[in-house]
Length: 457
Image (cartoon, rainbow, N blue to C red; front, side, top):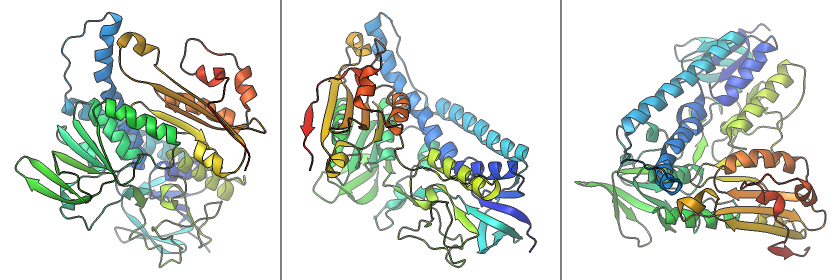
């Protein structure tokens, strides 16, 4: 049978773009459809613009800390429109690069919505039917929403937060994951009054307990109001802003903006997947095997739409593996074990491997090494902040099972620590590595005495 293309990719985010480009370099005829903007969540409304916002929010403390080093800094003010314009310009530049690289590789880009019309056919918004030997769905995720919440339309999601016409003086953020925690730090750093509301007892569920506790303490020092064990019951427009009511007795709070950051879900609605026979999970995610193949042999999926590891590097790796396997004659799969990750809170978090709690569930003997200290920079700035370093070590094999950092440059450090953990480094390997002095990272190789020990079983 003759097809219009060898590969049709639905979605121009990180995973889809990587798969399309690599498949094209292997000689495949590739078409990619993107209905919004090239770059997907990460580039357009996710990690890239968010990191730029994190940088902007850090200058407030930089200016204040400079006095401790002899600098005299005049009154500093922040102009939201100036920053947003600069941010949008950079995002536009990156979007252009994504498209240019695809065109250079020979990929045909279609700027419209595409849905699946069958196991080997795609319907474009203009009505055109395109047949494809293989279809790759890489439509990512979208913000979750509580549609039953009265006044839900008064809140914004992590999509709209990047395009607010003005900085909110008061913002209430619902959620306790990456997105909620990061934006709480961003807006606090920019000078907004921030309230973070989460239904659980601690933010960042699934992270090491010491890390969770440490960040909550640091956020409270920064004036971020943490409301745990609460959920919204309704939002109401008032003359002075938006009134937020709560279920479990907390007094109502009034804010200029309410950000719902209660998670994300697979962006599969209306794609025609069920009609084509593709099996979906309970949350609408596409079920795939280790080679990213769905229940329909000709249809594949990568990235957040599969709800496996919802991180940009994972989507890129999955897309590359798919293209090499199907079109390049090089069969391999993305390895989802031991993935370093960072939370760009303030202070930021870097983590890789098992938390202490996860390791204890495994039943192995454990040695825990932990250090908290004031970063050297703040011995002169006088800022009341602490840094956390933690190693989780197998008490029998001496293998480092987890590394957890909360403090300046944690994301940069964990990328390198992740290599060691991935290679199976032992605590003795860490100890044998000469320290770089004076740095915060040297604590990772100088901790000698366990802070806790747990026997096997």
